[in-house]
Image (cartoon, rainbow, N blue to C red; front, side):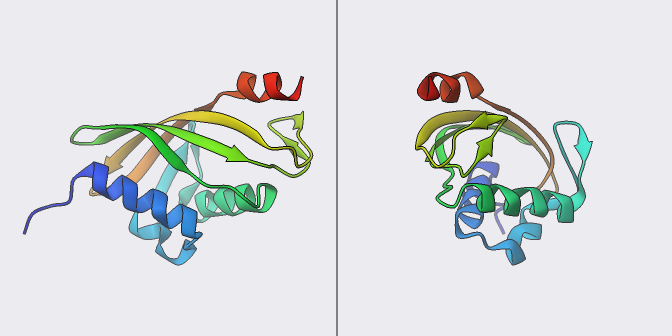
Amino acid sequence: MMKANLSDIYRDYIACLNRQDWQQLGQFVGDDVAHNGRRLGLSGYRAMLEKDFRDIPDLRFDIALLVADASRVASRLAFDCSPKGTFLGLDVNGRRVSFTENVFYEFRDGKIVEVWSVIDKAAIEAQLA
């Protein structure tokens, strides 16, 4: 049996997020996952994502760039959405904004165990100015 490559696993993970299919999240994310150095575990990671979708009802993850090797994925995600209220400390209040996120993932046994993410906050600030 051929093992799925990380690019395919990652695309399936992003599709899972866009469906908000939280029951399947553990298929892609390890039980002890960390985000930007904070050990969240699967339940904390899921709670973070659920909050993102509550704060941004029209949230959709679009892969703009994807590079993968044997154990890591680097992705540039593009967003075009309307966060409610405050987002990243900015008063967006439902205005539509476009921005990107550069994110790196470490995989172990086909699951995400570490995530490092940087959102282009300056792009949002420029649109709100």
